[in-house]
Amino acid sequence: MSFLLLLWMIILGVALLVYLGIPIFSKTGSQPVATSEDIIAERQRTLVQERERSYAALADLDEDYETGKLSDADYQELREELLQETAQIIVQLESESQSDVEAEIERFKQQQRGI
Image (cartoon, rainbow, N blue to C red):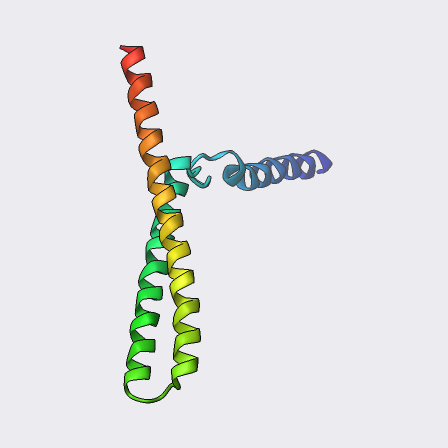
């Protein structure tokens, strides 16, 4: 009787180990690794979205001023702040695209050397 009990415990133990080990050792459960190109592309998308939001905020500010919701002093102050933020976003976007061009040139050079 104790032999059958020991056999069942071994069978259940192995089944439990297999059940718990499948997610650990399967490759389908792993997350894909983001490449540097993916990170750069995501950063550019984020900057483009920020630029569009900034443009929309400037347009809303101009509309509020034209309808008389803002005083001249408030309008000038808020517009200057938004213009500075927009300029920073554009500078970041341009520097990102400049580094992308340089990375493309390096990849091209490496391909040429490999041929």
